[in-house]
Image 1 (cartoon, rainbow, N blue to C red):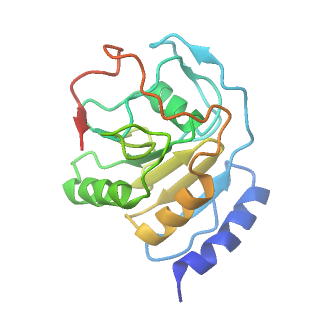
Image 2: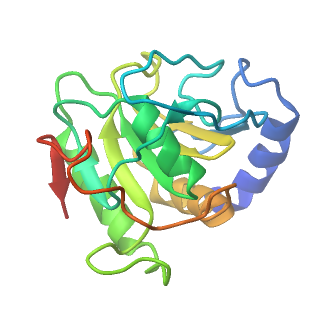
Length: 196
C-alpha cells in the first residue's frame, strides 16, 4: 500500500491529538505528524534560554536571527532558537538524532532537499527553504524529525514518501514567509555549517 495515501489520515488524527501524546505511526519508518497549537513567535537575543512545550519545538519563542538556508549543521549542533525561526519563515527543518553519527541518513536528507522544487522566492545558490541539523535533544526513540511552523514530523529512519507529503503540506506556510538569508557574520555563520 502507498504510504502517501495513509499520511492524510495520520494528519487528521494528529490534528485532534494533544501534542504530548504521540502521532499515529505509518510506514516502514513509523512516521507520524502532530499539529502543535500556535504560540506567538517572540524574538529573543541569541543565547537567551528558551523552553517549549513540545520536543522538538514547532512554534513559540526563538532567536531574532535564523540560520542560512539550504545548509547542513552537524558539529556543533545548531541551537534550536535559530532553526525554529527558519520554520517561522516557512521552511522545513530536517533533524537527525544519532550521537555516533549517521552519514547515510544525512546524505539521504541532503538528497531529499535537493529533490524538492526550486523556490522562486529564493536566490541561487539557495534552492529552497530547507536546512538539516543535528539535534541531540530529540527524544531517544526519534532518529529523524522535521519541523514546519506548527507541525512536527518524527520517524525512525529516512522515508522520502512521508517526508515529501509533510513538505508538500507545510512548506511556505507560516506567519513570516521569506527566503531571505540572515545578515552575514551572524552567530550562526560559523563552522558546523556545510553548504550544498
